[in-house]
Each structure stands twice: as C-alpha cells, then as structure tokens.
Image (tube, one colour):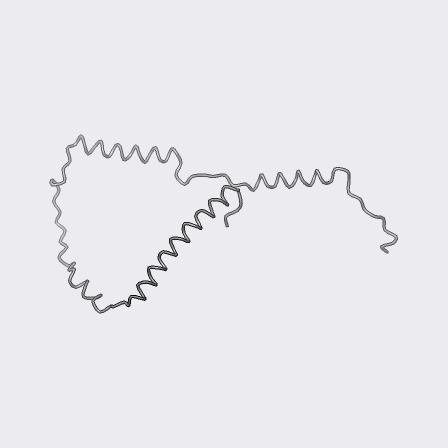
Length: 126
C-alpha cells in the first residue's frame, strides 16, 4: 500500500505561511503592562488628599477640640503579658526562626525579579 502511494510534497510557500502564522500567534499572546491604579486614579487620590488637607487648614482644626467618651479600661497590659510569661524559647529556636524569616525575604526578592523579567519578555506568568 505504501509502495503505491506517491510522495507528498508541501507547496512552495509552505514555510513562509507557517512562520507568518506563528508570528501572528506570538503577537496575540503578548501581555501588555497595565498598572493597577491608572494615572487618573492617582490624580483622584492625590486631589482628595489635597482637598482634605486644605479643608483642615482653612477650618482651623486642632486636635484638642475633640473629646472621646470611649473607655479602654478593659484592656490591661499586665493580664495580656501574663498569658505569654510561661513561654521560653531556646536560642536555637530563635536562630531558626530568624533564618526562616531571612530566607522568606530573600525568596520574595528573587521571585519578584524573576517574575518581572518574565513579564518584560511577554511570557505568561501563570
């Protein structure tokens, strides 16, 4: 059966058609950077803060004009500290916790730079 069939040959411009299709697919998948807060959003935030500060300046607000009637006597620092007075950590445990925290911060820095590089290339992050 294979002897009877003829050898198939692609058309003359097959490679150029395939490559143009691949290039168009890559352009469609590229990710464009969009900030979480747009320039308009930042402008609105800064304008609101500016209006708030201006109102405070022109109304002559001072902190001693307000009176609070909230009673915070139920919070007693001695009772809160007594709960944790029985805990004692060895120096090894503290070193391990410190090392773990440092390693987490290092991972955050490396992951951020790695994801930024991938984002600049246009790869999918997830």
